[in-house]
Length: 231
Image (tube, rainbow, N blue to C red; front, top):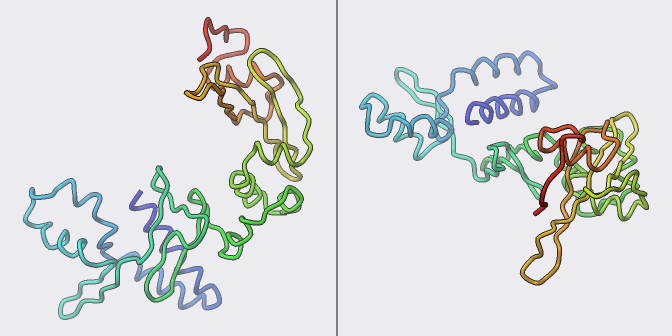
């Protein structure tokens, strides 16, 4: 994930120079020569105390960001002032920059997907109509995920397309994109307060029945899915 993050930073720096193609090409070459400092920490940790040759790199990683060592000089950068990642190690933040440096350079992302800074400001005031009107399919999916599929279905007046003993199948039609199919299932094991928790399972858009969708989550065909007991 450290290399993926480094690639994302390089891309972000080059994109910031989009109006200066000649300069961007030179900067891209310089970025490939960088020693990654803090962002090398993951692989350096695997050799902690086992190699004297790596001790210098590890010491710099503790205190600095990217750096360029030359024969008689060193160019060295600050570490990020903000770094937010999800459980998969992807840049992820819904209320500000996922990566920021003291000089103001920042990257915005949701679940690893780059998003404009202004886009995040809209997330707190989303409506079903605004989500439907978004022309960018990738940003629309981010909006749906942030808003909540169950909330969207409830507030958009959607009707279930199928219901059986496994749950309820819902479908969200999106223009210029595949449908979003969700199965609503209720946990048969009650919570400590006696209530039954509802779960939403994202299933393939070709799903036709709730049972088929639940079976798919177990890697089975609908005819093979015959649970003796559901918990």
